[in-house]
Length: 148
Image (cartoon, rainbow, N blue to C red; front, side):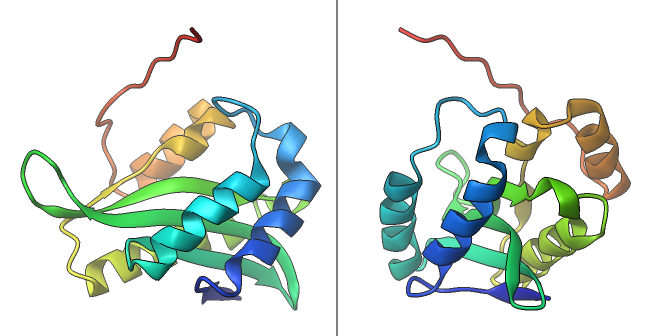
């Protein structure tokens, strides 16, 4: 089951899912779950953030956190996938793609003209590139980092 969650109910899903897979997910920096929840709470309260939980029965097994924002250069409203996580034992079960499809459907319903995604490509770049391609996505940008 996929459910859109609000500011009052998303943090338990984040904490549960991250505890089960946090060390198995490469990211830009160590994940600070409390900080993420604090920031995302405000985004959800401000109608900028969107959050979908994926469940097996009542057990949280994944989530997709994103934003609905206007592009700074064009003003076009877009949906931006920020963090998409599925615990390892539920990957390749369809829950991840159902989260993604729900995010995309919600973007259309909220008049977004574009979906920008890719943070999840850090986990398995080749597989994620295939998955995005099958969904009609094309490469859009590349990111680089340098610790200073």
